[in-house]
Image (cartoon, rainbow, N blue to C red; front, side):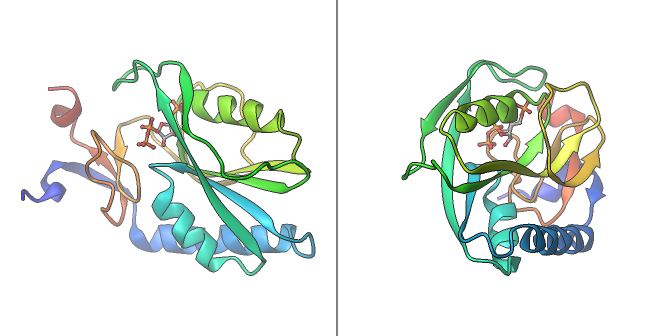
Length: 182
Ligand code: PRP
C-alpha cells in the first residue's frame, strides 16, 4: 500500500485543532440542548462518520445516533449533481430535536436538500453542525455549529475523501492537484 501522505499538498487543520474545536462544539451543543430530552444526531455518510463519532462521544446530553446516505448524480471535482437518498433514517423524526452532522459544505447543495427534506418531516427543531465549510459561493443553508472555514481547494482527511481514499488521515489537508486533476 502506498503512503497516502505523499499525495498531500499541505495540512490545513491539524489533529490538535480538530480535537479542540470538536470539544468546543460538543460543549456548546450540550449547553444548548440541556434538559430537552434525547437529541437525535443524524450523520451523513460516508464523510461524517469520524466527526460524528468524536462529537457524539464528547456530548454530555442524552442522544441517539442515526445515519443517512446520499448520492449526487454527476458529481466531479468541479461540480455537484442532483442529490438523492440512498439510505434513509430508521425512525420518523416528527417532534424530535434533530441535529444534522455533516463533514463539509462545498456548494451547499447537499445540506440545502437535506434541510428541506427533513424540515418536511416536522421535527420539533432542526439544526446543523458542519465540520468545515469552504470559503466560496454556496446555496443558502443555515449552519448552526461550524468547525472551520477552509480555502476552496480539494480537502481530504478526518472523513473527507477523494475517490473513497484518504478518509482516515488524522488532519484536514489539501490534496495535490495532480491527484484529482491529472
Ligand atoms: C460530500 C460531503 C457532503 C457533500 C458536500 O459528500 O460529505 O455530503 O459532498 O458537497 P456540496 O456542499 O457541494 O453538496 P460526497 O457526495 O462526496 O460523499 P461522501 O460523504 O460519501 O464522501
